[in-house]
Length: 137
Length: 63
Image 1: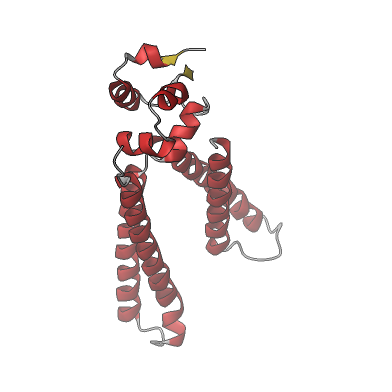
Image 2: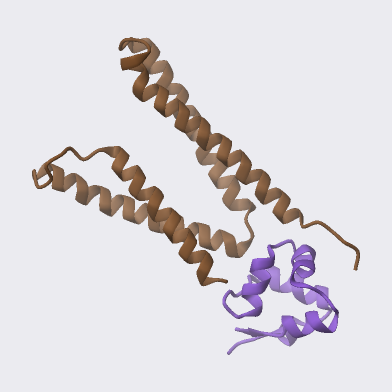
């Protein structure tokens, strides 16, 4: 049989690379929008609105790239990806609301930060993806 | 679902990677299908059956 390359891997790696670029760009614009008012432009509202708009636009691009990445996966990897995303979303919603209620009821001695929720979602997704990958090995 | 993919591959001296290339999925997916850990979709089952020139039911059987 002649040696052929697997176009699936080529597409998957290209999409993953683009997703990494979009995610990195989004993270950078979020950091600029979050810390810029204090450290870069002294709470100038116009610049803050511009920075937040850019961050939101790039975030929308990242979401669309996420969808493109999922659609480019083969069916088993798409299943693992979607299951991990579903778990991360569920844990994010339930965990986020519980965390918020703990804060509102003054049960926790600090403010519930959105960053903690993002970390929880990220860690849940990562663990769910690893477990899913091992399950189908 | 059981399947005869591993046997059919061996008869044709075909590796998992070569089969994966032919049906445009990853090698891990072929491995999971062979081990019965993942059931392929109907389009993928058709691609595999067409490649081996057999009917789907000659390759895949319900447990």
